Image 1 (tube, rainbow, N blue to C red):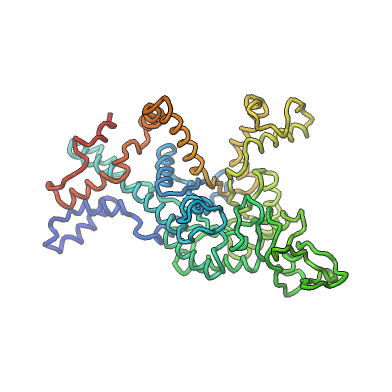
Image 2 (cartoon, rainbow, N blue to C red):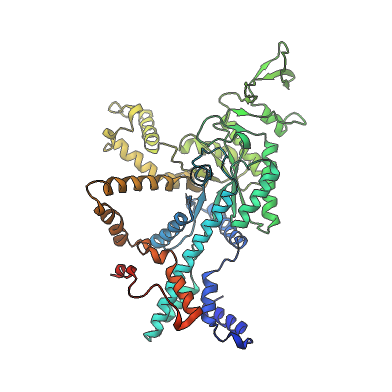
Length: 528
């Protein structure tokens, strides 16, 4: 509905009420446009449609991949989207990622926790709601400034500018974008997963990522000791998430099935099997077993190819898989997930290597031609070392002289100016586009970027401010840079909603409104 139509609709509502004479239709219209999304479900339905359209666009052209950055606070998510609109003019194909790791490390009442599903599970939907609260506030703030400009143009009698601003309002692009939300391993059984998924969706999530680890043995994807579940167990949780989406009317909801099998050498259960070759039997086929020569106390036995076998069981009561079966298990996990309700895949790897990822995707696409991945461009990888080693290996395979380099020490600053380092950096720069084209990656994300940027910027500020630079350490490296780079937060009162509040005060009280944005507000110093 256009700005003019919204005003007219509000006016029709006001007109029959004689005692509503103090309510201005244009002010109502502005408030409605500044609060486009009334509920989390409105957001989930809107963003699910965006994701589905982006997935179709990627199928048509792998150059149309999508990206996101992880965030642990609503303000961080808001500033990302404000920056995206500022630098690129559109939020198209740019999302947010909600990392369970960062919730555990930064949002738990227990304090910092490892990524082991020990944090309060309700803290995750609470963060989804918080993120969308801040994104909606970004809309309200930006539209509010446009409305002020519209009033100023009208007051100056500049009808052309007024029409331009009104057109910009009619074509306004919201800061609200899809969030890929991490539900870990579901925080319990399938019923617990379903209940929590509903909380995610009601908060606004259109995309839920779930992994095939055992819920009560959950580990970070880049740590040791990971334990997977049989496919039937994982399928039940995928279905639970789909039921949650459909119950709440978000029929386009997106499910990302994550497999940790590449780095997981253990399982807690031997899969139930009905007949040879079924999915349970395939899962069990990877178990590390010895042929039975004698039955010992408490042994668990299975049959394989007509032979009686004893799976190797650890004192932890976990069973181990045969070494070297990780890729095969990943491929089976991915095919089975896509055939049973998942939309996208996530393969957790130990390094960012296009050949490794692409090799698995090729095998998956032999069965599911349009299989697509979400990939974790993880800060847990040493990107510099990994890509320098990849270049070293490629050069060595080509017969190029690499005697000037020590492969084990390629992270050394001594190599920073080398041709090898330059080629590695170029491969890092093009990694996302190359992997989207060659490895089926639809969505690239960095899980923990703001965890690291916050630490780095704080370290730099502390070194300067508490050192010889004193206040200049803040002014030169923070405030002056905000001004020079046009960072909206330099006017932090405006960012926190002070001007929005002033507008509302004027709507409510007219000339009697006591506003904060007068001539004595020190934020006016940043107008110059």
